Structure formats: C-alpha cells, structure tokens
Image (cartoon, rainbow, N blue to C red; front, side, top):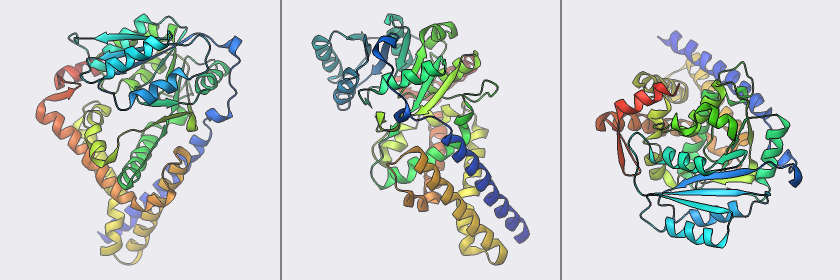
Length: 389
C-alpha cells in the first residue's frame, strides 16, 4: 500500500505540472481587451445590449449607469424587469425616462416551459434591432470604451461570438479561498484556450459579456432552445460553437467587472442551482469530481502528517505543485486575489466539494430547483438539457 501511495502522489505531481503548464501557456495566448484598439465610430455596427433583472435594486443603479456611459455610437439597451418585487422596475423606468437609448420590458407572468431569465432574454432579443446582441447581467460594470474594444476584436477575427472573461471583484478571506479553486477547476475543465479552434469541441460562454452576431443567434434558435437551461450562458456558447459559428474569447481586464457572490454563505447558496446543472445533472460526474478533488488536493496534505519516506516526499511535491499551479493561474485570471492565498488550496478543495455535493443533494431531495420563485422539476430540466444538445 505504501508503494501505491508513493506512485500515486508522484503521478499527481506530474499531473499538476503538465496540466498547469498547459493551462498557463494556453491562457497566455488569449487576447486582452486592454491591448485592443477602440473601433472607430464610423466602423461600429449597431449593437443592442440585453439583460434581465429581478430584485436587483442594490446593484442595478451603478451597473446601469456604466452601461449608459458606454461611448458606443447608436447604442440601444433593452432591460427586462422579470417579476421584481423591489424597486427594480422603478429604477429602470426612471432611467428610461432620462435616456431614450434604454427600453424597458416588464414581465408579469412566466409562461410554462421557461426559466425566468431565459424567457426575459428571449423577450428582449425579439425587441432588439441591432446587427449584434450583447447579453450581460444586471450587476456588471463596464469601462466606457469596453464595447468598442470588444467589437474591434470581434471584427478583427471575423467572429460570430465573443465572450469576455470578466474581472471578478473578490473580497474577504473566504472568497479569496474558494473562488480561486473554482477558477482552477473551471480552467482545467473547459480548456478555454482551445475554444477558437474550429476543430475543437471546447466552448465558452460568460454571462457577464456575450457579444453575438444577431444572424448567428437567430440561426441557432436563440434562447428558445435554451428555455430551461440553468447555465444558459455556457450553453449559448456551446450552441453557437457546435452550429459551426466562429467563437472567440478574451480577458476583459478592468474593462468589465462583476462581484459574483459576497461572502461564503452567498457563494454556497449562489451555486446551489448551478453546480449540478453544470454537469448536466449526472450524479456519477459529481461523485467522480469530488473523489478527484480529494485525491489531488487533500490526500497529499493528509499524507504529510501520516506517511514517511518517499511517500511523504512525493506528497509534499504534490501539495506544493497544486498550490503553485493555483497561484500562477490566479495571477493570470485576476489581480483581486494575492498569490499567497494559494496556501489555502486544500481548504478551497474541501469547500468546493461541499458546494458541489450540496447542489446535487438539494436538487435530488427536492426533485428539482426553485429559481426566481418558480419550481422546475428535475425530469423537465434533464429533458430540456438533452434536447438542447
């Protein structure tokens, strides 16, 4: 058994180094928005920004102001108030009265067979008239030239779909422990640097910023095909990529910023509906992911205190390799988290596994998910996910 664990930790160390280097060099090939020129005004195609808001009175005003401050010619914004019970509707209506570029739709009732967000985005997209659609969220902050720089990249690469990896605003100890591990898994699992390769089946979609050529969006069926997709942003990217359209991605740097969830409690609750959906509701994938995380991120730390000789040596190598890879990847992805927080890599793994197990357990126990006040049976969600492939 001792030899088994020695070999196991040696392989884990090798795996961290190989996949870490692949990821770091792959991410470094992706363009950065700060390096892109702002597309000249006379060359800018028409764009409509589309977003849904439900009970966003706290975050919406500043985010909306940043959208309206975008220096993009002929810009149009369509916001959908999705059955809000707070001041969201009033905030949107007041802003629309001040700025004619903003149009507001109010959803009072949700039709059967739709998630609230996907229905809202579908309603807005139908009202949009631009050559391009920019799907975003109600809590995203934009730099004034962000859209013109993004459009420069899209036009330069003849892209049909450009998604930006938004800068995550990370605060507090627990966010700085958990979010980097989530990012690590996201990078390893998606291998996002392969998205531009038309031969690769890798795809990407980030809800904070998805710029889509309208013709491509409509050709794929739009959000009608994603009516019951919880992670509609990723599935929109998949739908476009697999339809043969040109998909690109870039780092937004400081030009597009979002605070994901504030504090550990909100992080745990915030992914409750997403994590199990992210693996297409497959319990075996959840079990495998948890086992792998424990093996590569937690078991080596335990062995540091329980093993001896070569086993302890390779356990130390595996531990340090995991921490080093996380630190280096975080330095590429975000400047909000100091590299020193990688020392909490095993703790991040344990919390991540808890979040994943909790998401699956609650969904299975309840027989579905409740989102924006509506319950969706698990069987219905599974069928919709299969049909969207």
